[in-house]
Each structure stands twice: as structure tokens, then as C-alpha cells.
Image (cartoon, rainbow, N blue to C red; front, side, top):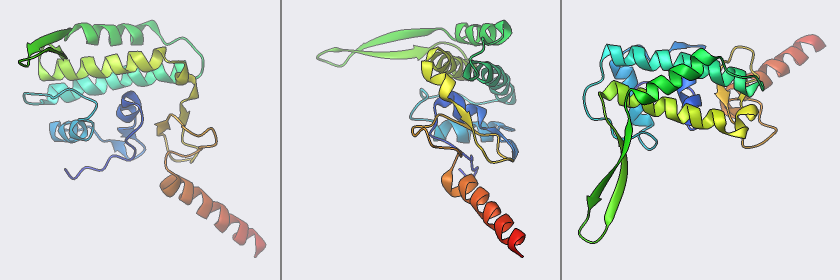
Length: 185
């Protein structure tokens, strides 16, 4: 895994949106998507099967719908019907069931989806987006205050302004410092 993703650890839909960064689209190939899924493995069900170029396109397409819906919802506006329909359609394309197994002493319930690897992945991402969109916290989602950064985050501290204090925050502070000292000369 060599691909660097600029911001991970936000709600899953935001991590997905952030793969379309100011650096360009970070989900170009099946390998890119495999690496991103591995980084998100603790939040995604195990994906068995190969990831194809068509799966990458499917993820990028649902990412666009998720981004559009979240952009409107975070501003207190109703998402477009087409975006909500795409989320619902994606979830239906890989229905979820609760699979029961006996472990020798009790039943164990595990949620799993039917369908191809790509459909299961897109369905999980659409469901995570639907849950975030229905959460009142969606209106607290912010875009990084750095001029050249498009990353989104859900601040745990109301004073948080940057996607990363060590990256964008330092860059903005250094630029301000430079401008102040340039003006003094």
C-alpha cells in the first residue's frame, strides 16, 4: 500500500468524498480502490472477489451523488431527488441480510450483502451516506479553511478550521507570518 490519502478517519462518506481532492482523483484504478478499501477495512465488510475498472467507476459515480447530497444537506438544504434516488438504488442493488450461524453454544448474527464485489461496496457506501445525511450532525460538516483545500471534515472541536492542523493549518500560519513580515519591510 503506497497510495497516500490526504485525510482519513472522518465519517466513511467524507473519507470517500475526500478521495476527490485538490490533488486530483485518488481513485483512478482498481489498485487505488483496493488500497482505499484496505485503509477503511475496519468500517467496510470484507470484500471478497476482484475489484474491476467498472467497480471504480461505480464508486466514483456514487461518490459524486454522495458529495452533492452532503453539500446541500450541510448547508441546510434538501438534497436533490436524483442524488437520494441514486443512494437508494445503490443500496437495493446489493440487498443486506442478517446471516445466522451457530457457534456451538449460541447463534451469531452477521450482516452481509448479496451481489458482486462492486455492488456490495457501492451499497455499503450509499448506506453509510444515508445514515450521515439523516444525522443532525450533517449540518456541522465543514470544508477546510485553507484556500487551496477542498477536504471535508466533521469537527469534534467547534474551533477546528482545517482538515489537518499539521498540514493546512501550518501552511496557512506560515503564509500569514510571511505576509506580516513582508509588509513590515
